[in-house]
Image 1 (cartoon, rainbow, N blue to C red):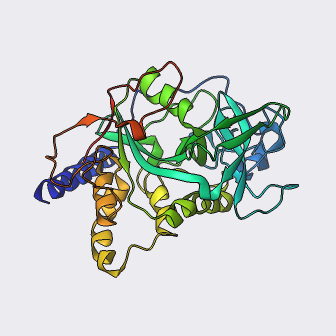
Image 2: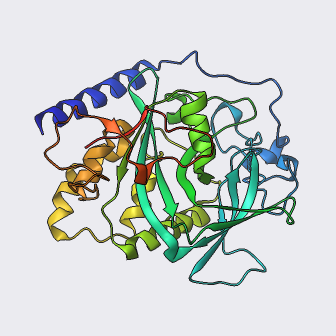
Image 3: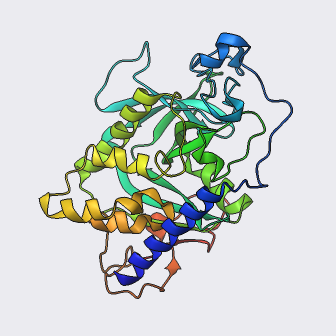
Length: 339
């Protein structure tokens, strides 16, 4: 407890200092080929036809809402907020029909079997920054006999089946943008609510960027496993691509907890610990405290998980049950589960 309190204090102090000094990172990349949504009144638009890039039905045509690039087109060629309850599809409570799911550099309409979820795993991807930083996600693994049917949005004849996905809340900027923690507090980016294939995320995080990814299997009921995707989709439908991202107050972590907290029942005994852990929802690198406060981490003494008395600094390779199942690709040792 003492170590965690020190961590919270140091992270808070670091961010206050950086924001107060108005530091600008040299990491930001601004492309001269950024697309503009137009002049004059376009500055106040949420969408614009000039922001159509691929031409499929579910393209968001999103416009940046603030910052130095206000009024420019968000680069939605590779990242979009998902869309639920589509036109011309039945509203089936057992099958969630979702557009703008990302896989292989394309967008797909996915048919998620709501009651086919086998595992829900919280992930934290660490990345280098001016202060310790990370990106959090929720991994959803479907049962082998409940694969997700995927239909290409630009080529409906093209269909595939996948079993592993990642829910992620991310920042998005103009063409050529690059994420910056400090600019993320100045309305520079839009918030996107994404669902991506695990293979895409793995290749990006581990294979290409060599980032460390930590996983915590969640201790939730079968019913709660069926609730997490609808909870995420409800927020995605409500927000679309109209809200600015904020490094502290609308980020990858607190938006995921917004989804979980809207549907999970943690019990009255956990109310106070959850309130105390609010800062852990703000800083992704401290997210384990927020998971612990909700009793969400699965600690079971068997080969597929870990006992509660395992030392803090003990790390092990991901067990087979939670490994990334990709053809011709071994599980990278930088992907691990820790207590």
